[in-house]
Image 1: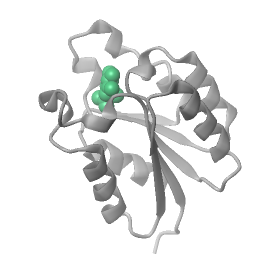
Image 2 (image 1 turned 135 degrees about the horizontal axis):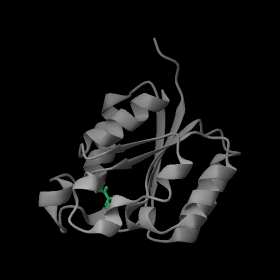
Image 3 (image 1 turned 90 degrees about the vertical axis):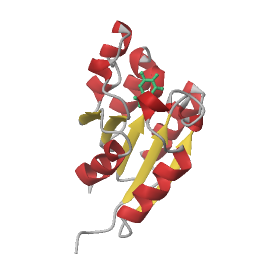
Image 4 (image 1 turned 180 degrees about the horizontal axis):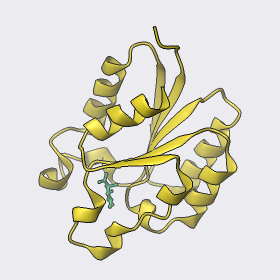
Length: 143
Ligand code: DQA
């Protein structure tokens, strides 16, 4: 059996109402359903999650993860991916591995500003475009 690890699922702005906004791009599942799918898929792991629309809350949570036993983070920073050097620095400042995930394929998006993620450069790896499966693969990469 694979060892149990403590995983944090971290979500940035917007992703708390996926169904209400652009299901054609982000898929049919709510954030709660995605979390439930990940937890069901990895019963051996201890999985916690946090969604926040606030950059500082996300930074504080990343910092806290360095000292609370978190062993891996699956992070969808939402639109902050494209702009937040503060989140990138917070990711770099902790020893915990972070895998960035996106529901949509950033490189296939119409808006050019979505083609670049500044937070991704600070992460161990990136999974983009596979819908809820992006989160499953993110946990798998850490476990
Ligand atoms: C997203 C992609 C971002 O560009 C967007 O702002 C989101 C969702 C994704 O999961 O595909 O909020 O991170």
